[in-house]
Length: 315
Image (cartoon, rainbow, N blue to C red; front, side, top):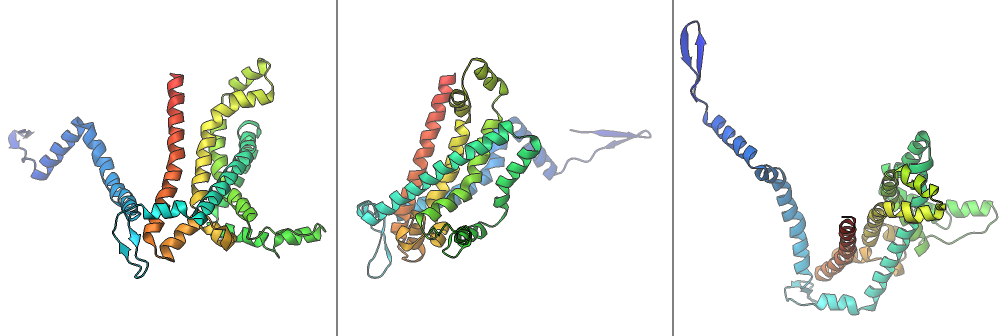
């Protein structure tokens, strides 16, 4: 577009826009007219990176799980088959480890839910603002320290000559042997993952309107009935979210079992690490990883299906 500038009677023509400026205006106009192009330009590089790195690695892991390792040379033989999966299913030691892992993860999840609900309810519905702040800070404060420091601290506490047994001796209560046992795994796991349950449950309980609880009380419902029929259904999504944040990491955990568990109490995460880095049997390790992934994805899909049904019922 030709533009003119009038300056003291002299008529001057503006210089034509450069090619870069014209291209910039054209691209800007196109992005303004097509919102989908803006979204693709914004998310495209991230999705490409995730597709190449994340999905690509999962695809390679899935393919490797159908190969096998030569028992003589240790080389990976690209012969397709279900040998690794049959081996994992038929071998009793792997079934025992899988059952032990799921059992410990479920026990930790239930324990954290039982501990988190009263704490979160008190912080969200009863505590004063200053007490609520201190309580939430005490929940989050352990997360500021190193993960290994917290594990080693509990190892020192639960060891045979640790702080726990020293305190029991001072009280003339004898001693307990909790170090390097399933009890130590249960205690340390519950401690490590409790904040990840308490915070989602607190967020869900905080959103409950006081009018619902008051209406339930006015209608003559007891506290247990109010909790079961009003509070718990509304807080259920937060409980499920916290449960997943605990159960999924607990199933794949290998640091805590390595530091606090015995060799005859392995969990599936430690087995996966040993197969990859010590035995170098990558096909079997890949099959273990795929089975763990399926075991974790199925509960998530069931929860999403439950949420969809709930939304459809509300409509």
